[in-house]
Length: 398
Image (tube, rainbow, N blue to C red; front, side, top):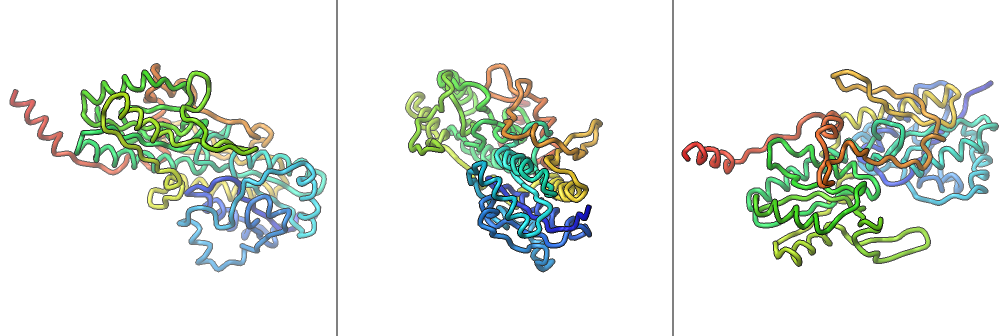
């Protein structure tokens, strides 16, 4: 069978700090494959296929392609466009019209669902469809972690460490940091990597995997405030009560989505009202997935490799699979990238397992820290506190 043809890469869902690194890997590997003629980017996500909005990105100047490694967002655009069965079927004729033999979908759970459905309608058409994992939320099942998460983890840990130094300097209030991840608390949990010594921020961590109890939260905050003066709390945007409902009421609703207020702001107001303690909230939000300054080198390298492996899989005749990330055993951190049937991934959400959450549900365990630490390139920058030195000196005199 003649395997020569064009390649199309499609981005779906929210960007990450390394989504363009995977695109870089796709372009560079495709340029090296004799079976690939033109390399197209779908400009604007999956709906761009139906609109035939393609751009030949393989012939871009080398200096522009190299810039992908340091560019946040996605250089070809993305979407959350809902597709129906007839639209999946309509894609086949579009792909054939443009002689596209290889299609790569780069995204999270929803995008892998699209990838699986497109592979089904293309399976007898000589079109090979492969998925590339991407999500800062780290909620794709089967794999060890997803490209995009390590950079988000490094960002939230660094921000928490810096906010912790600020609060420690003027310990008069409670600071609540709201992290992204509505159903899975991986980013929230990664804030624990900010700690080095006992008493370091974050002092409390609340994940969506556990029901949130306001009474226990207020007890925890009050106890730590009396002890430390300044408290840093990191919470997930998706905290729910014992009924499984968001702890903040919805502010707007459409047929497809419900929009809620800020959890951090709600909890800061609760601390003020119930405890009479000064409190404020911080919400890094999109900053956590757009920060190139805090991009993880491990994340970037794995994202590039995932893009390359997807091209290799497609041109070798693989279809209906996603490039996975599996951690190798041993003391030194290393990964391998097996191909996983996309059927096993489609819309299966991976949440934090119980062994990574402490009994009270207000912190994570050391086993999570050990799992997560290699992903952010080691320790965060050191910080100094002369106040701590003064305390030790005072203790020695007593």
